[in-house]
Image 1 (cartoon, rainbow over the protein chains, first blue to last red):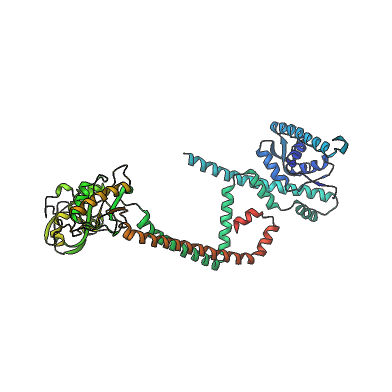
Image 2 (cartoon, rainbow over the protein chains, first blue to last red):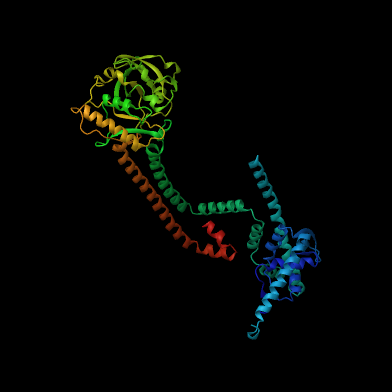
Length: 113
Length: 405
């Protein structure tokens, strides 16, 4: 548990887009997928997922439809729209830039200055 | 049409929302079931797995609320919810509610009454056209508006600042319109009174300067609208009727418009007669006496572009002339212009100060009532600490919570 990190504000949307981009998922599935692709290193409050999902649907980045899950239960499945795919590309690029910048900034040594 | 569209979209959203709420419920339930499935497969029994899943999920209502908010535009629903909650809360403590309502009612009532007075006497403009340019002529040294008729004529004919200057006095007469004489209040007016004010009759005609041809030459009556209503039952055939005023025959020629109160706000008078018939009305004739103050007030509309100071200077030059010409009848004769509504500065100053003070006092009462209510709420808040703790634990957010308090 102590090795799990709270996610940064604003990154949940990006994680959801990424998780859904790998295949249509229902809410709980999104949670599991994020856990899986992040190596269980990120801690997401289960309920906090839904406001984010509804927001993304409203923004037209995801679309939702009801279906039957692998456990044979009725569930709402989410998949990316084309706008969602575009947003995912942009945000991924933005995130990589930020991460690279933060990484190099934090790795700076006295003699490099 | 636009409004209709708005309501339609609002209604659509309500229906859409109730469907969405049901879906959201089902979705969250499905989430918990899936989680419970996972927990069950790790060895827990079903009941325990479901309970654990629910606990892990956290405050369901709170997340639902966040979902609603992420959809936006639910201001009205939030407001309705808050209102319903407040009403429930008030019903739960009827004593508190009664005290609060009573306190507020008392304070607001006091304010309404005082504001009524303030509005009637000071704020409401006189019911005449261009009330803002209507000024009374007040004596500079005595702060009253009494004027002798000859002086009035000089002021009327020699000034260059007023459209016209008219005047009136007030008296009581006996009116006999059939077989039962009654006492009535009359305004005894100069012939140009109505024309100087710029009003138009409700019925028939008004008095005019052209009616005046010497003493007792204008035996005409103009009824006030209220008097016409109460004593003549709105009879439109009243024009042309002959009545007896102090036993002298007078003809009713017209009815003033509703709410016409002349240049003052002092009170509704019964009817208007011409001052040239002063002898029949007051039993004396003083229109030629320069030392007798026959007119209670003189007034007029300023000409466009003339300000009160210029008009006063103009009048003062006439005053100097009068002073010099009739030294036996006059001391210093100076004039200032004053608002007519409360009879210039004589009553106006004190009345305005008094009513303003009263309004301030009423405001203070309201403030005190609010302060008392505030402390009452404070006392109740400490009683509600259990409820507050419970609601916070259930996931109420602080902003919503404060809206409910």
